[in-house]
Image (tube, rainbow, N blue to C red; front, side):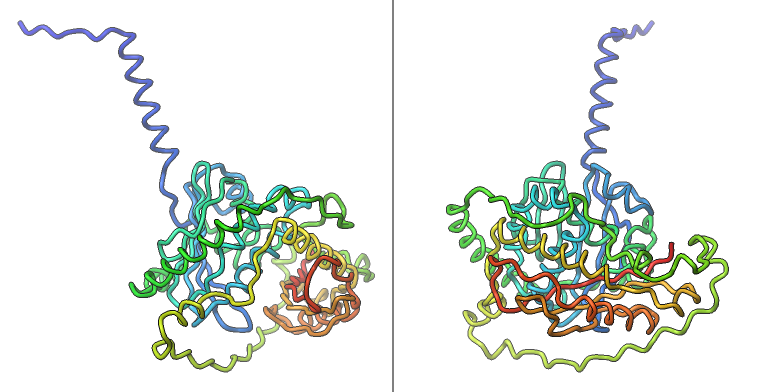
Length: 405
């Protein structure tokens, strides 16, 4: 007779507990997968392919932002060059219009640190990654870590620039929160967009140089002073709300979005966007290695302090709130149930007078595009630049959201 040794019940309980903890640990450190993917263009030219990775696939922006799990933002550059100033401005402005003043103040130092990591001009094939772990956020370019931020809340606030109430575009946001559904052609392009070994080595050298300068600067850091800016405690995150503009829109019979979608007439065909002239590629091979490294850095790109960045973000939010009072929904666009987002680059002087308006992203309807530009002209002069802000001019991106209620 073969006798088996019985395992005590208490020991079985311990084994079950250990197994459960092991499974929980594995789940907690699960590798995020692609939730969605989209391209981003400016002035009619594609700049990069963006991907959002999450542990839990979903089609809800809110669920992604609230989920306390590993997430990843990744950008693969498709343009010949991507200015670091323009790239960091996307994050600074995106956070400014999708967060409250209290949130901006709390994350001011982290945002300053993050912005100061973005010193390298990105080239075609570069892979930029923001990785949210269990307790830290890593910023990586071509596999080289540029820095680390000890706040997962910072990642979620940064992500609002992409999938928050006022994203880069409605289509951009919807394709990122796609529950894992990605166009096969776009997936192939994403996979094929990679840096060369030589480029990776160059980025590594640049990162070491930047890290050394950051170390010196960190020794002189001081506490964040309070910045007095006249803003409401809770700014409208979806501003500018065109539907509430000073027009007799209450007399217009606009059905709820679901009903509008069912009865919308055939929309006007999208306008053909002019293609910008191709810029000749710089002949990097002819320059000495030291000059190449210097050329990859932004020469006049000053470091942000928490105070200066917070002041700029609050000022940007103030400018957007101001502009919303002057935007009007075109009557023809209302009658045709036309919606869209127009993004303009607006340059003002220190007194707030508009010097230049440039269309960065058009909607599919000329009436909305023209209405946005007219609204900016009516809004001039904007609130004056704060005294502590340097420069004689200030350029900011203004997203104008035309949305039926």
